[in-house]
Structures are given as C-alpha cells and as structure tokens.
Length: 308
Ligand SMILES: [Zn+2]
Image 1: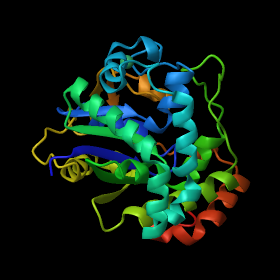
Image 2: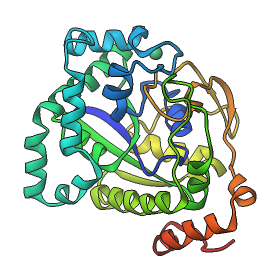
Image 3: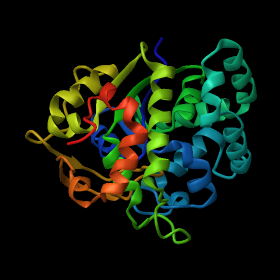
C-alpha cells in the first residue's frame, strides 16, 4: 500500500507517447520523466539534453535527484547499469517473464539494477514533489522490470497507433536535437517496424492485460483527448485531478525535464492535439502494403482496417 505509482506508457515508438506523457506531466502531482530506459546511456554517460534544454548533467532537477538517490551522478556506475539492464530487461526476456520460474531468474539477475532504479524513481518523486512518475520508455520488458521493483505500483497505458502511420514516421529522416554525435533519429523500414509493432503490442498484452492496464489508441486520444485523459487519470489513481486541457484539445506545455524521446519533448506553450494522417498521402503503396501484410493478423484486434 502507498507505493510509488509509476504510470508506464507501453507500445511501439512513434505512437504519440511523447505528447501523451508530456500532457500528463502538466497534471498536478505528475512528473513526466521521458524514456527512462535510456537515462544511463543517453544522459548519465552521453550527457544529452534534458527537456529543459540544458545538458543533462547541468540540469538542477536531475542533479538533485542523483544527489538524493546516490550522492551524485558519478557515485553510481552507469556503464554497469547499462550492462545489467541488457542482461534482463530486453525484449528477449519477455517470454521468461511470463512464467514464475523465469520471472524469479530475471529478478535475481536484475537485483542490483532494480535496487538502484528504485532509488532513482523514489528520488524523482521526492525532488519533484510528485505522486505519479510518468515513464514513456514503451519497451515492454523494461516496464515489466520496473514493476518488479519493491514498493513500485505500476500502472500501464498501452498506446497503439495504426502500424502504417508508425511505419511512415520510422521511415522519415528526422533531426535529433539532443545529441551532436547523432544528428538524426534512428530510422527503420516498414517490414522491421511492422514486425516490432506486432511483437511489442503482443508483449504488452501478455504481460499486463487483466491488471492495472488500459489500452488506448492514439487515434482515439487525439480525436477526443478529454475522455481519453480522464481514463488515464483514473488508471493512475487520480480520478479527481484536473484535465491538462484548455478547451477541448489544447494543452499548455510547461518546461519539462524529460531525459529522452521524440524531439517534440522540447516543445512548450500551447499545443493542439489533432490527428496526424500524413501517412495516407505520403506513404508509397509498396511500403504501405508491406506494413499492412506484416501487421495483418493484429489489425482487427485493434480496430484498424486492412485497406482504407
Ligand atoms: Zn532539466
């Protein structure tokens, strides 16, 4: 009882998780931390930009979080944390996580990792005065590992977007403003993104369905942000919270301290939530056919038509 609530956004990347998480970050008592699965590699080691615009190691919020959790950013071995995370919190560990013996084995391997991660998340809540940490890492295996931390009360929003729209976004060349070493965001073709779409969505359902879990389609979220956000706040255990909306579909984003994610995490001010249908006109027929074919068995499950 009374554990630290972590609202985990699961699903494949390019599904609108950044705008959803940052909208939730505007709710009183919520802290939107970004993709925390990358904090050791991208932030502690590579010193990429915090959402507030300064290099991570100079951000006063994160400095205080690490001071409180570990006694400073260099008081914990970030490379060891990256290696431990890879040893038990990747997609290939989803199957073992589904059976008790496998779960115990993964938990034993991750013991030190989970202890440090628990300290980190608790320090985030204390320093920012939050009751709910929003973690938009999306990887099912990492989210499951976070749920293994003693004292963490994990709630999962499983965000799904039309796989053609996600594939279109993965194909596009996009600037990556948070690192000089990597100017562009990672790209992949429609076959790879559609296969990952299948795997990650099935994993999220296998790991969490039936528990404190809500499936939300990105298309429904942007069509009717109010009811969608209300359902997420209920899931997070904050049914009385004010919606982060001005009017029906506008959010006013303040400065965030997200550690990693889509470049729109740097956006502040008024943002209108609206459908993004550019893939319909911009995607080649071939790419569209490949993504459709590979995601076909799951399309009806999530309410997407094969054509149209
Ligand atoms: Zn910051």
